[in-house]
Length: 67
Image (cartoon, rainbow, N blue to C red; front, side):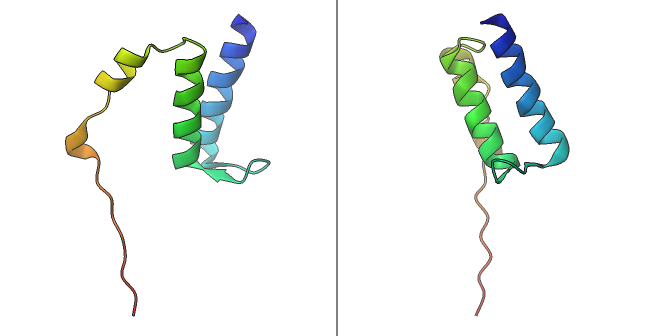
């Protein structure tokens, strides 16, 4: 199980480094969401700690309007 946890963290950081995972067709945002969800699920990171790490002041949704 420890090996799987390290594999998950390694794939997550590899996706951050490349900017995408080609075999999953994901960019950084879904990689971050899935990596953190799996980290909480495998108890690499506790849910309370994960919630405390979120800074709501920096969460901004940007959209571009085109006519």
